[in-house]
Image (cartoon, rainbow, N blue to C red):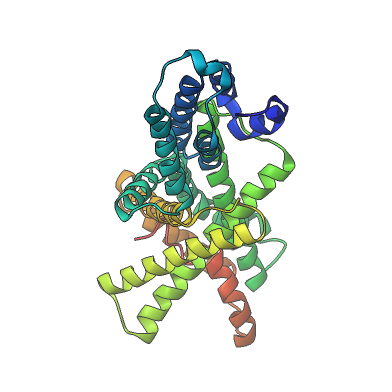
Amino acid sequence: MVAVSEARELSSLFGDHLTSLRHVLREPDSLMRAEGLYSLARELEREDRIEAAGFLYQQVADGLPSAEDSFRVFTPSQWASIQSRSRQRLELLTGGGADLRHSLEFFGRRLVRQSFNESLLGMLIANAAAPAGRLLGCVIFRRLASGAALRSLAYLTGFGAEVLALNAVERGVRILSGANLDWSRESLGREVASSALMLGSLHGFGFLASGLARNRFRMSGLGGSCVASAGMLGGVYAGHGLSILFGFRPRQEMEGFLAEGLAVWAQYHVAGRMLRYLVPGRLENWNRRVGLYISESAPANRSPYRNAILQPMWLFMGAGGLGGGG
């Protein structure tokens, strides 16, 4: 079913599962080989490696028994069964033809799995790194700049610390789990750029939605928090969409795109709650003190035109100090 000449492409697609794939392909019996490919595809699907899983499901769905299998006794229904199961899984992965129950089941499993991956720990550390980065930036640059320039540099340093902490923790957890990672400059750059777009959009849309609810619709309490959370969710989807548009992330089917966005949004909120539980009262106090120190060191510019330009930029760099979402 799979040509040997495709080995190089398969290596990048299957990674540490390539050895298992080779063992399955050596199976002389067509039906046993198809069952092995199906089982391997299910394992890849559970690991959220959708492209590799879909490739194997397609191979099984399009495959035919080998002529050398004429000595083996198996009924046409057995071959039809494995192909039917493969087509059903393939339809779920691509979003075509699957019924609502199976689609919701697949979406729910992906959402739960992605909500509790290495990104949750990354969000936890990133939430703590952001105010520390802002404070460090203010201390470092206070002799080189003042006013709006110093404030911008402080927020930019904090945002950079948040992005780098998220990526560093995610990669660290993957290394500990035995994953083979691409350490090329291009791969690292794509990851950092994608995280920056996502976190920046999450912060910016969240603060804009919160301000709109508070100032325009006079909403506070639970209603205001819901509007802010909805804005943050929209920011996550906007960040992911921009990352795909700029080529920092691969394109996804709609179910995967929606599930991953919801998972990141949930991780951000859960990480904030966990930090508040681990250090009760200290996170808000820490953010408040850092913000006060920056305000005293870099007073806001009195020019309304300059503030109108800089304020949105500060918001997208986490200037409001949500610290993981309420």
